[in-house]
Length: 404
Image (tube, rainbow, N blue to C red; front, top):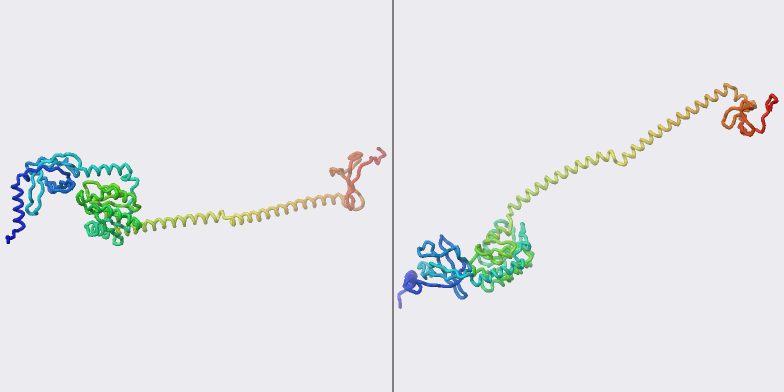
């Protein structure tokens, strides 16, 4: 039976094998860059083809390195030059890159850009169609992995801000060939529940991990949902299709939780401020109404129909009294004149003479006829006797002196 070796011994042996292999000392590999990252000045990425991938490292301080970092990015088809070496402590191997030739965009990224262009021309990225995220969401749906860090971050963030919010999880696959179906089912199921907002996403990952969020069918599910959707795919380097179609996008699940809900304590403060403002407004309204009522009362006291009728009645009473006084004064004046005429008549003994049979004769105008010279044949004359007036017509005139 062979003696067991330690892990360190095995890794050291493998490292020496790689170091002694002339082929691995100088490799030229063609593939597509994926999941490019920077850490402490060095760059790490995967070089992949349709079947597999290998990790690559660019040590920027390596004297033999001639890579233009500014001209490399995810999705580029490149030729990598370097050596394959073993990281003894971790037991992993990578290509230590010293040169990169850029041959163009990878096939996946070409298709992705074509899909973005197609959806853009259909208007699916247009701000016009994006629904507003409600300010006071209380029922929040989440489409993500059941046991991932994303749901924990989302749940904690939401509950910290608003302990009364309801978080409804639809456990979904977030990577793999069938993940897009699971995501679509989650969106459609939660969209039926009349929620305030839905979060769709995961906690970051490589380009390969995010394939399902670049699926055209997922894009249509997000676009056609009636519920506002926040995309939280968590990949800051490239915009996913889900990010571009969603009503809002954020970089992390935590940011999604922040955007999806509201601070209950701030809400209480807002309500208190609104209440004070409302009370002040109502108080001002009441005071204004009181002032207007007082003005109306004063106007009614002057202009009210009852008051006006009473004033008219008072005026009529006054006018009646004035009329009565005027008539009385007129009657007194007439009576006074009549009395004076009677006295005048008495003073002339006319009445006494009339009472004894003497007539008082006047013409049509009331002028006393004292002589036949005052009338003509055919004139009417009026003779007042004791018990009335006699109307006569002059037929002839004869002088008492015998004259005609």
